[in-house]
Image (tube, rainbow over all chains, first blue to last red):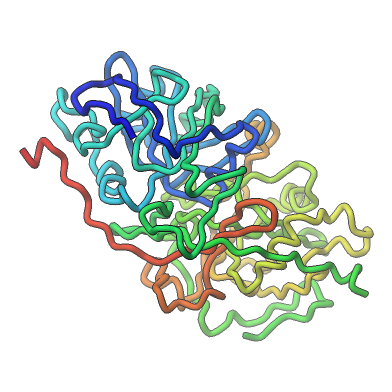
Length: 218
Length: 218
């Protein structure tokens, strides 16, 4: 994968060979299994990233998602100003960085160093929206425009995004389905935060046959 | 575990030997890793259950959660009428029933058989709120009072619940942390829905050390 320069904000690299577009109608599936995500945003030459375990799909058509963004975060300020955010679904390969950007607030860094993407050496690439830095080392990405909902934003820190583009790593997401099997490398598995620096990785796929209702069985 | 009779609505059984109370301050952790849940409710002698992949924690204090409930569902009608719902976090042991209650609408059953809990032979027990049937075969449970938000309910099918009691299976959740290790039986692993009858089970815990910011490293 061609990577952007750490020192530059907006040098778009080509998406890597495994990154493929996901139809908007299937975008909800990228979050359906409950991964912790990285939330990134940029505005007026500044950018940042944070972690968020509290995210979910919200609607199929139009494709919408929702995420809780603490009001104290610098990333939320960038999102409020730009009206956009990206969700990147990290893999075990960048668990240390995911934990770090979730723990450290940009407000605790010097003003000139408030970019946690650079602070933790994360690499970015551009998908469709040139104003949204997507995080490398992840296995899925959703670009979103904020659907303004002042009441839920202020009362619950809940932000709604309409998905404008979605991408996934074809090694683990193909034909609209996650493909985690016994031989999938752990490095490509999504992260599910517990507490105290502990994540769980996603396990393997299980094909299930539905139970039959008794009124049909009888 | 003492089980309730399938044919009776409200025969409370004793929580099983492994079911332990979870402090409300830690209740969010039961959903933090993104499991698919079963949503159950009861009102005026009727009860039902549905599946919901779109759920998440919303707040620490007071402990709140949110879940998307399609307006076509009978369970949502029961919740609107009773002002309460329970979330039960199913394990692989009841994957077939979880898939089935997610696919079949109670509205497609005869009016006298609209109870999917009975239709699929699910067993229930009572935690704290005698009006909330909790589903056996699960590994965590949250009892919730609806926080009325007419706008988000009607526009996004999004319901907010304030957690009034929480429980977990001590074999996999102890001291406020999920404990999924290599020797944890698959039957106790939480389910994470993909599509087309495929779930992923949760994998194992990974302890991560956070990356250090460059401004500290330098």
